[in-house]
Image 1 (cartoon, helix red, strand yellow):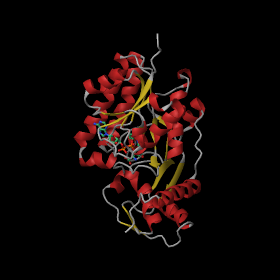
Image 2: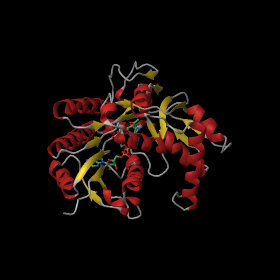
Image 3: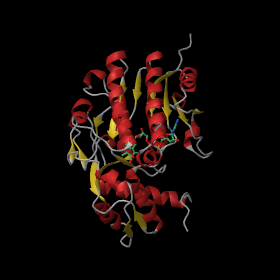
Length: 326
Ligand code: NAD
Ligand code: AKB
C-alpha cells in the first residue's frame, strides 16, 4: 500500500512570518509537504503558489478540519492572527481570530491526533511594570486585546497538553524585522518601515519616540526558532507555547545611527501616536535562558549584521522594481 505523505499546514501563510517560514519549511520538507493557507489569496507572483495553497478562514472549524483531512495534515504551524495595532482598532475581531482560530487548531489537533501544533506568542504578553529584562516566569498583565489573547493562548497550550496530551509549542517572538512581506499591523512595524524609507532616500516619520527600546529579531532567526523548537524532543521541553526567545534589543536612536553608517543623510522625524503607549508597556529585552538550555536556542544576527543584510535585500528588491520610487 502506498504510504501517504504527512503534511504541515501553515495558517496565515500570506503574512510577514508565513511568507518566509513557508518557503523555509518547503526547502526542508519538500514543496508538496507544506500546505500554505490564508484568508487572503496571495497575489499571482507570490512564492506561496509554488506549492499547495488553500483559502482558509481559521475561525471556520468545518473548513479548517476539511483542509486538515484533505491533505493528511500532521502538523499545524498556526500563524493566522490579528496583531497589536490592528487589534486595538478592532478588539472583537482580534479576540475572535486569535482565540477561536487557535481553539479550532487545538480541537482539530486533539480530534485528529496531530503530531504537533506550533503557535507563536509575543512580547505583547507583558504590560506596564514589566521588568526591563522580562523573566520567563512572571506576572502577565497586558493592556492590549492582542496581548490578552496571547496570554490566553499560552494558558490554553498548557491546558490542552495536560488534559489531552496535545503537543503544542510556541515562542514569545519579539518584533520581527524582514524584507519579503510587510508587517501586518503591529507596534514594532516601525523597525521594518524605516528601512524602506532609508533605501528609497526618503524621510521617515516614526510613530514612537527615539528612546523607545524593544526586543527585536531578524527573520532568519525567527525561522530558526520555529524550526528548532518544532524539532526538539518533547522530553527536553519545560514549557509549551511560551518560550522567551531573545536576539537583539535597541532603541530607535541606535537603529538610526546604524542605518546612517549606510545612508549618512537619512532623515527621521518623531510623531508618536497611540502605539507609543503599547511600546512603553513592553519590556526592553527578555531572559531566554530556558530556550537556550532546553532546545539550544542561539540567534545569529545582531544589530549591525541585521541592518547590513536588510539594506542589501531591499536594494535588490529596488533593482527588481519591487519598490515603487517616486
Ligand atoms: P501578519 O499580520 O503579517 O500575518 C497574519 C496573517 O493571518 C495575514 O496574512 C492574514 O491575512 C491572516 N489572517 C487574518 N485573519 C485570518 C483568518 N480569520 N483566517 C486565516 N488567516 C487570517 O502576522 P505575522 O507577523 O506573520 O504573525 C504571525 C504570528 O506570529 C502571529 O501569531 C503573531 O502574533 C506572531 N508574532 C509576530 C510578530 C512580528 O513581529 N511579526 C511578533 C510576535 C509574534
Ligand atoms: C506587534 O507589534 O504587534 C507584533 C508583536 C511584537 O507581537 N510585532
